[in-house]
Amino acid sequence: MSAADTNASAAVVATGDGGGAAPDTTRTPSPTGARPASRSGSGFGVGFVVKLVLMALVDALGLLALLAAYSEQSWGIFAAMLALLVAANWVYFTRRALPLKYLLPGLAFLLVYQVYVVGYTGYVAFTNYGDGHNSTKEQAIEALLVQNERRVEGSPASPLTVVESDAGELGFAVVDDAGEVRVGTAAEPLEPAADATVTDGVATDVPGWTVLDRTRVLERQQEVTTLRVPVSDDPKDGSVRTQDARTGYVFRSVLEYDAAADTMTDTSTGVVYTPGDEGRFEAPDGSTLAVGWRVTVGFENFTTAFADARYSGPFAKILTWTFAFALLSVVTTFLLGMFLAIAFNDPRLRGRKIYRTLMILPYAMPGFLAALLWAGMLNRGYGFVNQVLLGGAGIPWLTDPWLAKVSLLLVNLWLGFPYMFLICTGALQSLPGDVYEAARIDGAGRWRTWRSITMPLLLVSTAPLLISSFAFNFNNFTLIKMLTDGGPRFADASVPLGHTDILISMVYNVSGLDGTAPRNYGLASALSIVIFLVVGTISAVAFRQTRKLEELT
Image 1 (spheres, helix red, strand yellow):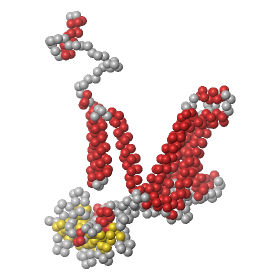
Image 2 (cartoon, rainbow, N blue to C red):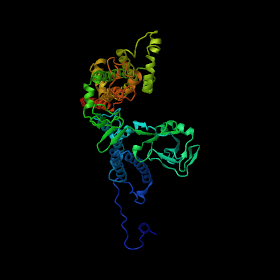
Image 3 (cartoon, one colour):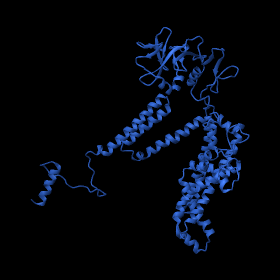
Image 4 (cartoon, helix red, strand yellow):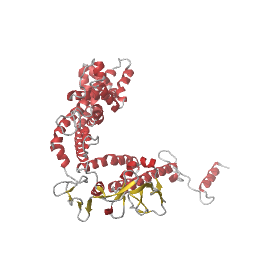
């Protein structure tokens, strides 16, 4: 068989056509010389199956988040999560959005952890969210009715047993005066329990419920003592409560809410409370009920921060110190790190690798741990610095206002110079050698070379990092909290603020999270917005100025 016959037979076999005109076996060569991809099974390969499994997991987690948001009636979160799920499925199952496949995860995290957080902080800044105003109006009404319950005078002491449903919900099985067992939960009022067993006047077996023994009751003591089981569908009949898990008493709230008039009446005194603009029920004489709700207060929190003497005085001092601390921290760490980088970049120095390794040891230690270590070393009474290095001196490093600030700067210098040392070392090693050679030929000395060549070229590479370092130190909460805790305190301040507090630690103290002051999340959020604007403005201006350095290159 000739070569031509062989080629013809192969063409027939390849096309599956044993007769007719000979097929065109010519192929247009690929521009890259690559073989054309096979279409068979391309839509259901291993990559597609992996993608399908991963997206199924994402959708399952997203559905769980949607259900949680729906149960809490958080419609904003529900809408955002639904939009993210729809976008994710469209992006990863279409062939027309290749760039978004890489951008979507970052955009999603940006939306959740940045945009949402900033937006919610901005919302809280315009509310009275804090102690006494933690919830919605409906929740505040419910809390007021529960917290003002009193035992119904003359109500019997009923034998009680703590029971648990199959779903894990606690309930009470109460034996009434007629000897019948009635069982209920916080959501379901007491109902007769058929075929329940009563032994010595106490329910010992309730069909459909598990009777808890003494050990399990003690394990859930907090839940038992706070549980309230309605006597009936009418809230006026009160609810059963217990303190010893053995005897139940009927309690009824002395407050009565009229939904039609939107008023709260104290049945024991007859005083009628109406809702006020500050988110509390208020009586005609100006007295208010303890529990309120969140309302919008406009710019009141910002006015408090800048006009209220309790905060405006400390705020001005803390703002000044925050700028000084951030600026001095960047300058000192950069200068020391640059000096060491230049010194150890000299090729005549032997053992440079060992020295460089030793220089970054402070950077390898966790910041909070190093701050705690220095707090102990600088202790006035038993610290290593006073007792060993200074021969028993009693220098108040952390209790004197000025020395405490100096201590913060020195400790931050010890923690921060390795970072500057690393970036300056990398920048120095990337500088062109011919520039230095030209400077030497022109007769420039070391000072002139450093001022006109090294420093400007270093700033080109390090200026963005210096700006980020300023922003970091502007919010360096860890060092302040662990080393001085903001102290020593201002002698004339009525709020828990001190000489070494910076704005971010002021926000923490004002928020009341440490328990030293009433919680005031609205004011803390307003201060956070101020910090955001200050840092954002400074960073934007600084980045614009760094563009001028690019002309040097």
